[in-house]
Image (cartoon, rainbow, N blue to C red; front, top):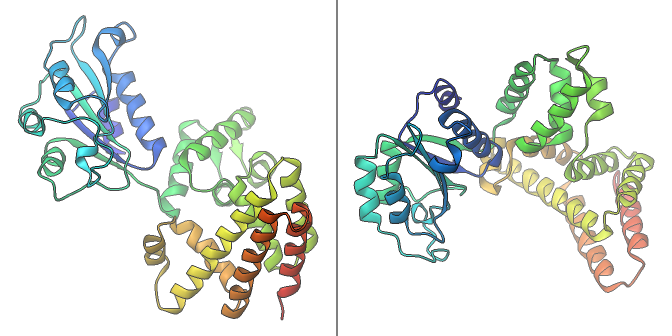
Length: 340
């Protein structure tokens, strides 16, 4: 990312706007700023963090306009700038937005003000949002698409001087999912494991990568789709050994089938995968995987499955049957349903 490159080259902006819901990108950017702007000795005097749902913006501006002590720069993180959004319900304090507008047009040259807006979107109609975007270095922390995810994994592996082949990357992303924090954590584990060979292949990924709960459910549904009920039950029993509650397992199965149903219906209407992802607000990679599963069901079968899910959910909540018995019966009916 160009913003990261400039920070690492110590080419700082007086204003930054980090916004979006991908926490890893935001946290990584914050860490790069802390590491490159301040020394350890300067942290106590020249680093401030503000919660703008609790503190008026003018207090942060007053801090920014005060000269740094024992250093050249001050670094200020301003979290939850709700005034950049359309949401008025969270505002607990009154902000002097006019004061902020004035500051944005002539920021203190020795202070670095970082607005951290972990929101899905900002209110682009607002004058303050437009002004901040115009004057700040902007980084949108959004979910990466399938291609960019794989590029990101390869880049992270290369940064650790580890080679990761294409098949290994494909399997890795499939197993771990699309959350960058989880991907980073799992990749760190793999990198440490191959410290001698410096090579991550499919067998390494298969052996060491932790499956997310969602991925286990995807695999379970996939086994049912392919009528591999013994393997489906093996996944289910593994989840139970991990003390996952039947009602949570059912909820995730229901979520997967709702996604399959939505993808099938919207594909029938002529929507592309990117359009579907944007409409139902899920990652395009999840849509791609669900699309493959949707081809194995008719609309009538999916409708029947949704009814069966609702009935099983009621049984679990009313304890009409033992919870485990009810969920196992559901899986058996699901397996028998395919191929009707």
